[in-house]
Image (cartoon, rainbow, N blue to C red; front, side, top):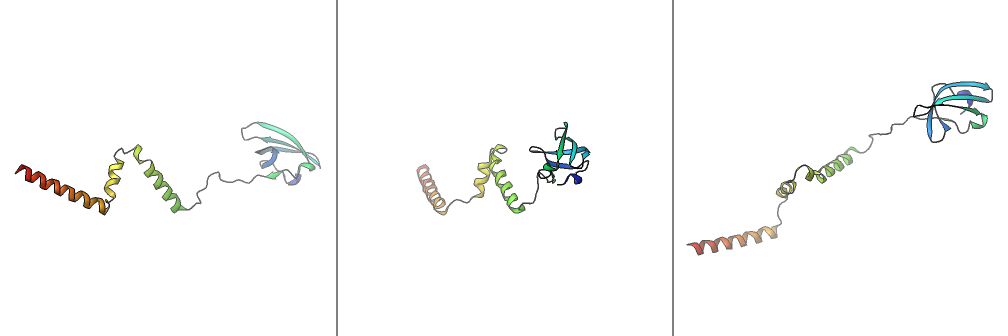
Length: 129
């Protein structure tokens, strides 16, 4: 970025290490040097003298959103539902009972339980009569 392109109010990278600064004022000292008065992200004011040698380091800061919602909606919905089911026990202590009613028992276990319950019912009936 050339020194002539630096204007008041611009956000620059390269003035301070690892931070974007906002220029408050620029004062042309000579054709090859410029005094920058800038504000840091925490609000502190500082100043720096830059020259033509610093042009390679200076760059306009691009503004980007820190959070974006451009992902796959179906994948997000699936993940959110899985997390909801994962945490359901915190809000519904009977969750295991509710989900066990949804799942049908296996064929082998239902036939075995039925035959044993019938035989015990016949046994009880014959003993008591």
